[in-house]
Length: 205
Image (cartoon, rainbow, N blue to C red; front, side, top):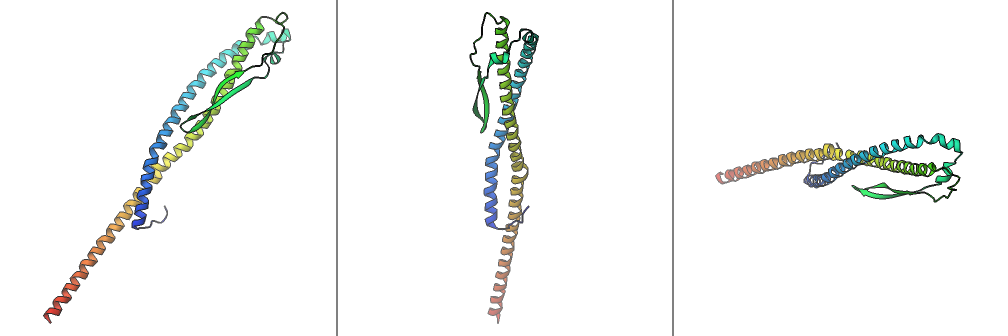
């Protein structure tokens, strides 16, 4: 702790600081709770998406042998998808939100292409969409955890350092100022007694 100025001006400054800390701390604590709740919500969402992704992956994998036999370029049939991601604000933090995926309308010969390709394409599109959504949630979780770490550090700083320091400084200054006032009163009484004794001696002489 820096050297304390034992003055009334410093006492006022420390009281003002304490009021600021005590006013700001509840806001930080609320933000911390909101971030924790959002992390929990996102964690539950990503677990559900991963379960769906695993199930769809198993389905798609069961058809992988057919692709080689038929010499079908499924990547060409799918094309390059366009992923849509927007942002939302949670507890003052901008987070990415998956809003959809759009695949190009690639036409192919229905007479030559086996019937199961249509079903497989739909499954693959759904699987790719799930993976993009999972990736977006992962990104949001990373941002949330970083913000929670910073917010928790600030809460701890106010709770465990700044507020206790201000309270301790205020207490020390009050004790010092009180002692100074008591000493001043004592000196004043002593001076008064000396003056009274002097006048008594003058009157008697």
